[in-house]
Length: 218
Image (cartoon, rainbow, N blue to C red; front, side, top):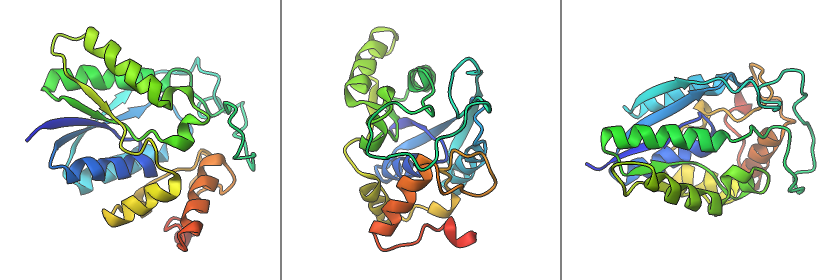
């Protein structure tokens, strides 16, 4: 079986990406990051999803406390009820996060002989986050292969052109356990229902005529 590394956050998008990669018959290794994010609950969700699928995982602890992001700095309020149609960079952006995550993934992939790295970036992400853009992922892939001994590593973002609604629809067809995923930026025990991530998620389930399984528990 061909080996692949997946960046697994515990969120809805990375979970669907995992199930897509798994459907391709790949031998997966999950890479989870603890970067002192306020929404640490996503780490436990990522572990659970990996365990459900019998996938070995590693948790990489890194310090990004210098980043001026509401996901890390508790003194910066997480935006609520923001205009979701605006494409400006929100304060939830963590400077260089995907550059760092993918660099770790490249090192891990080369070390285990994996040629594919999966990431759950998609169209709604790159409308606000520069390190989720398709041109960044392509450029990073080229740069990474210039800096490793074993070349041929591919960065794969199967959701890149999908909306949140399309991602959920894909996940439903693959039987993704959305009740074990976490999207909220608020850092609480239950979804805040007001941050960008919660609202994109709720809106997409609603458009499909469904109730988010996380809301059924409230």
